[in-house]
Length: 306
Image (cartoon, rainbow, N blue to C red; front, side, top):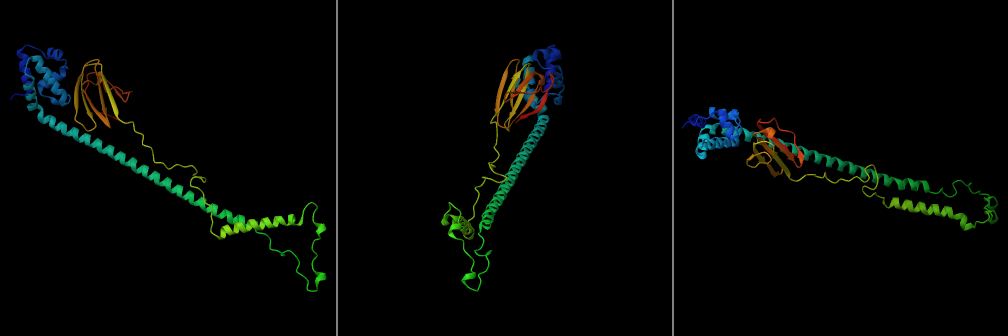
């Protein structure tokens, strides 16, 4: 069976049509028409666009479209099989790179949480040690002087040489004897309470996060802020074939005429192939994208993701 390009050329010449006339009638670029007739499939867009060209060419010549598609598969099948294999390998590599990046982020988050937890535990331990040492220092400061330490020793000669005690009249005016003795009693009581707390092993503790260098520090995990679905909107300013692959799904083809719009939703990414890069405007989640190329140029493997 002769190739689809030779078949088209013979029919076109029989009908007396030129390449430019066919290009004008089918709205296919002249260089694409020549490449199709010469069997130069490398100069054509992806397979879905080339199929559309074959159908349009066959329709313009009044030929059976399915027969033309069958001839096209026989002529270009091996070429596009190799091209599809290259595309699958490229998509697989992109997916593996994305997984590696996600794993790096997970490991970094886990290390960060572990470091913060260690710092928090060390701060809590230091606060507990500080609170334990404070009562001991207070008890040592409040212990009374031993009775009789600074008084002269009693004389062995008799009662007449015993130290004289203060007379009741020498107590300052306005203070009773019980009142004068009160400070020593309070000091002794407070000292006894402080010592008893230390001796019994009672240690004041600090509520975690109440003070210290990391007071009020929250160890909540890192909040995962995701935007949900990806939304892709395309608007054609010129006639253009469009192929969209959503995430890991099958490619979807569409022919957009000037003024027509298309809307797709996905989770992770879109991979676009445009037959007319300058004839399509795109928005990702409502954000306009930069032009993909000049008018009439084919743009392949355009990856749009978060």
